[in-house]
Image (cartoon, rainbow, N blue to C red; front, side):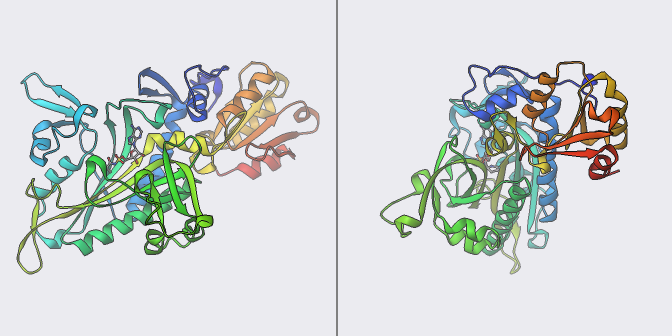
Length: 422
Ligand code: P5A
């Protein structure tokens, strides 16, 4: 992609209202633009990151056997009256009335819609287990939307819903999602921690939140530092047995972890999984015939990932004082190619043409060298290929690793070979 033909409105100064780094950098690097409190337009560069995060999630969800669907944003209030949540949900729900005076709402979550879908179509234990997911915008009229995409009012979530004939089946589904979540977050370069958590308005009595450690996180985590040693194994039962809890779940009286082994840190919640049995299937009459011919309510779980929040969380985890440092797996482009002067345009064009244009953001603009360098550092692409004077006489370019800052001179052909995926 040629920068001269792209739309990348970056900001030099840090916006006064943005308190945390990820909020500042996501505005400055031209990822998002706010149009109302907690509501954002995704600009082209930000959208590329969002889509890449979606792709990783989709890939691992599909591998787990879950099936993608797409449920609507706008939902009829009657479904929520059936489940009993319509009044309980309170002011966080954006309530709408259509032209026929029907009460509608902009979905803050989709348990009711998923239950309604299944009750009309699944009749037998033979059709289970089933796990459906979608990636869809939610609206929650948060009291305090803040920190950019971290706590938005409109935000993108991956939410999955599992259906099983009994508790054992549902526990298998839950554990499979726990494992899948660890895989998903690791692929993004993150180190997740799973903690026992409060179930809030979703309900049920078994639930884990997934966090990354960060000073700017809104939750307080208490965990046995053995968790991270065990993370490699991805053995869900062992991970679940380790003491790791969020906020009010911590009780110093019952916590048996020795003081020196108990860590207390702030965390950003990037995912949350729930098992809630028949909380929705019972009132909404979603039942199947079991193996012994009985009519039983389905056992359900739901599993959320904050897709848009992850963009902020990843920036919190990977940045320096110059800007973002994207892990390669989620970077909007892999390479930033910088043309420092018109005299080397031929060499820079040659490199651009030899590489996959979808992987390269080519700064072919006429700005000053300083602006070019600082913009490229700000947007944080993993690699920079810098084409300057030496390209003219000696055929040499500089290759910079954004994370380490290491710069290596290379022959143009060598650089092309190093980065070619064509
Ligand atoms: C699980 C899937 C649920 O809604 N129902 C469907 C369950 N869980 S949750 O914990 O409430 O949300 C899941 C994840 O969504 C992200 N999230 C947000 N991201 C940005 N702005 C918000 N206001 C916001 N609220 C929730 C979090 O990552 C959360 O773990």
